[in-house]
Image (tube, rainbow, N blue to C red; front, side, top):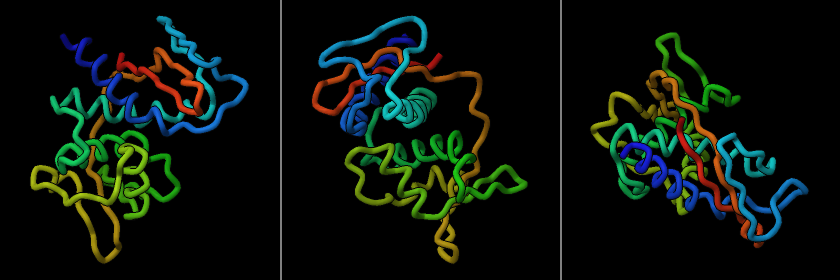
Length: 175
């Protein structure tokens, strides 16, 4: 059941990102072709970065038993929490605290949301359930995330399709 949920979540996440990877390079599959294998597939360079948001969305959905719903403030902030916790430490503007926290400027959090959600408009209010995990500081116009350990899972792209129109559809799985 868990593998089925992961597959459904990854297909949903892939659908969200299908329009995000524009352009093609010489490593893309020809129009309408698909690759599927047990090993991680080699993907075009302009598509490889889509694994990170797909990973954060899958982890958020599976660990919290949530449906993909970017208009729901709880899902929205939990997904941002996962993305920031896993991938923001490498960001130039991330400031790590001694307590394990990470502070990001509002603009960076907005950029993360635009990567995670295709129809992103603006940051939603932080729900009460997330008030101890994500804190907004109006004086610094920044967000502090109190994140935990990612665990032992890793995400891999297992299939991808070049749709022939500058977009790709990918399937990612947590292992």
